[in-house]
Image 1 (spheres, one colour):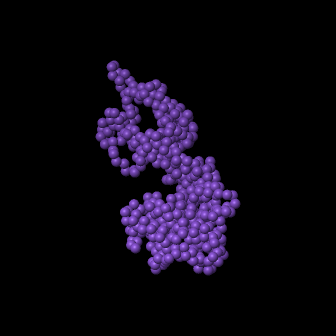
Image 2 (cartoon, rainbow, N blue to C red):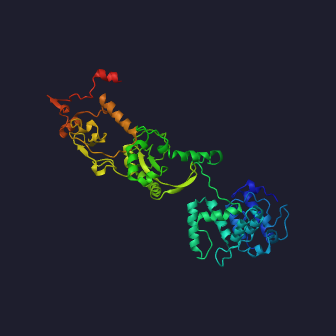
Image 3 (cartoon, helix red, strand yellow):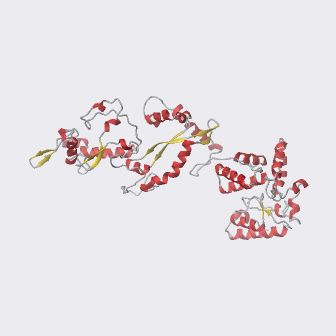
Length: 485
């Protein structure tokens, strides 16, 4: 019988459909009086016994086990010769195993264990424990599953559906709660793995790149160690010369260390930054191309950050157990949102907080001192000198700012310097060169100075029927403008 369809076709192919029906006919012909047979789909691997119609359903949905080309569990010997009695071919084990065949879903699991007995020569007690698990009913009176067969069945589902260890452990707890109390079912993933390991079915997790480009194993396994070592660079590896060259040198980092000493103790804890590059919330950019491959959710991006916030709460409140490949140990990793990086309009989208009006700062909130300028018809924030170092000379100057001295020490803000510098640069150049439509100087700003009662030397002077703007310190002559360009 041609069996090349096993490796050269897949569910849905006409050749595959013909092949599995030939297999079912072969099985039925040699099954004898057996009502449940080993299922050879890639999930069951002949470990689990099912009715024939259920096997057909599995094979239509799941691929045939590509390694199963000699149907020794369905009436054929190792030489490919059909035997006269399917049941005798499968059950060649001693009487004690045959007596518990129903408990082992037809005895296939028991045969596998017996065939692997030579692997336990150096540790016979482990083999006895494995036999005990294979013969122990899942709970008193259970005729279908043993402790071992139940674990094998669930681990097949775990592998087939790609469940995480946490999800699998939750399922174990639910199943254990469903069955009678006097059961031997494992409630922890560790117990389940410990049960399977003696069978030669160890469970190993291999980390992968999020972009599916590499597995962190063999020659690439050291990548994990390198990354783990970098987690403590800010404490052990940086140059501590007092200069501000990294967020760890910032006042905010020191403020967090002082406020949360328990978080500071674990040097491997993460301080995360959220960047919203490529956001164009108001559609003000004409370019259809963005170098930054980010997908924007528009003005309502804060709504879509809820799952991220949930994960951040877990990382802050409880943390997660992770393996440090550099120190070769497990530890509890916690994380916090250190800052966000964006321009000011995107700051409002990200936080869900309005960034217009008198209280336009999500950090300062009601302490924001915005003022409405009636001539310019805009809100401005004049207390610029409170952002200077606490001992800066300009904090005491009244006339250069809003007529008040400023001694308040305020918390720093994290904003996208690139966009802010560009906007400020555009405004400065436009004002210095007196570019129409770009300059921030004019009659309206000078009238606002008069309303505020400051900088009298810059107030508008009326000469006959014209308005004269006294030159300011930044006013350039035509020669100076040409020199600047």
